[in-house]
Image (cartoon, rainbow, N blue to C red; front, side):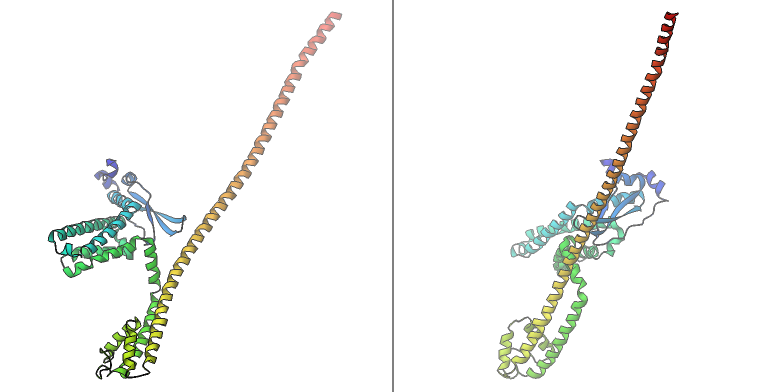
Length: 384
């Protein structure tokens, strides 16, 4: 066991140093990498084999196998780190540690922690231990994939979060952002990752809706500022809602969220009886149309994601059915060939039996002829 985990000797390293080359396979965030070589094999020949998952469905995986050549020592490191980071139990342990770390950061905000230096120190040491584990995990990822980790957005995000936790650990304001480590759960849980990826795919449509909402805001802000600019000065409203364009924009955002919009409308109607018309128009356009458009786009993205998953599952089932059909055809052809072989064997056996019978008959006839001649000879002698 210790031999399997020990690095290769210097003789082995020097013998293959000239011929070793590093051609690391491309890393895809949705891909699953599985190490196909054990450490002893790595130490003997300095190569590793990885299976790069091109697509994954329920029960059906399509892999592309690539062989990568390394210096034997680097190949050993690549193999050991790959066995760790690709292990399901290791991934589940990291998810559990992220959850526990997030809970402890929330508990650390209570008074019994902040007002007791001893307890606060314990929480700081625990947070540092969690950060060390996350750093070790990131180092293992780097040892296994090299600089390819920066080609994946999720791993790059992990790197920035962990590195930022170390570099800005002394700044009290920045330390409050340590809670963003919890977002790393998105990179670990497949369902969350797929949901975020679907939302990112609809950003162009979301931007179009945002431009429409900004246009609606600007039009009504200018309109409300011109119409209701002096209401606070004249004492009709309890607060300044419409005296400047920026104040009007903030008021419109409050109305869009339906926060106390009826009170603002009623105060305005004390000066203008028909003020409810622009208010209700803005609420209908911003809240009931634009916001619902955003919700519709998000729902469409989730539905598209589910449709793609169903399509992949159906493709996997179809591929499996085709494989089963090909197997059945091969079995039918094999049975046909076995029947032909059985018929040929039976024919050969019958032919051999016939030949043996013919030989026995020929032998019997040839052995009976001398006895007949000897009988005739004895009879002839007796007559003489």
